[in-house]
Image (tube, rainbow over all chains, first blue to last red; front, side, top):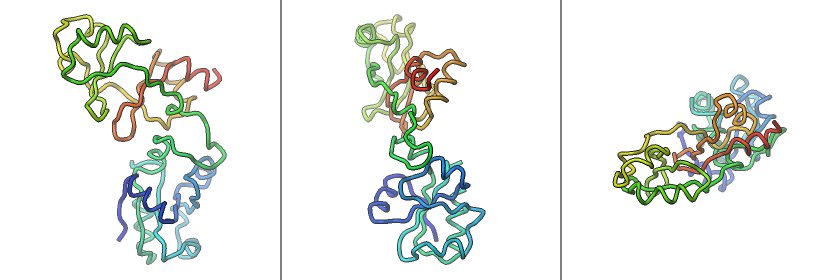
Length: 67
Length: 158
């Protein structure tokens, strides 16, 4: 079950080597994204597209805002 | 959108999934670095001036007024000890009863913007609204300072 986090926890996870995943469309990712984040748009979250993620490490997803 | 993405990863069998709910706007509002074609653009957070007068809710107008007169602005902000923005003291309030305390005299909940707004958007908003300053707060509501219209316009190349 996924866990909702705020910035302080994000910082900890990133420092521990978490994988950052921006789920916005490609254009928005290309415009600006968090350092080291990869782009897996929500519409394309499939078993195939997520095969590149390391299942042993934490995965943090984010979009534009909380709305 | 991120809660749905986190849920989707759950259903795909991933066990260590976290949803950074405040997302990119929160990151940008903290002035943290980014990557991408538009990374590094000037934002409100880069233009903030922290030379505005602040006081506590129990401050008396008699004490705040001279500090404001010596500042580049005609107003002051009322904050808690940890810097959370509570209200604004306008010129008229400052000129009224010298014994009044800030909590009584302030205009509560002034409009604010977050530091992630681009200089261009800030400049457009200030020009349209004929605003000389906008107030910038952190995602937690802490006062960061103000952006002056001329600074925003210069950064936006207007």
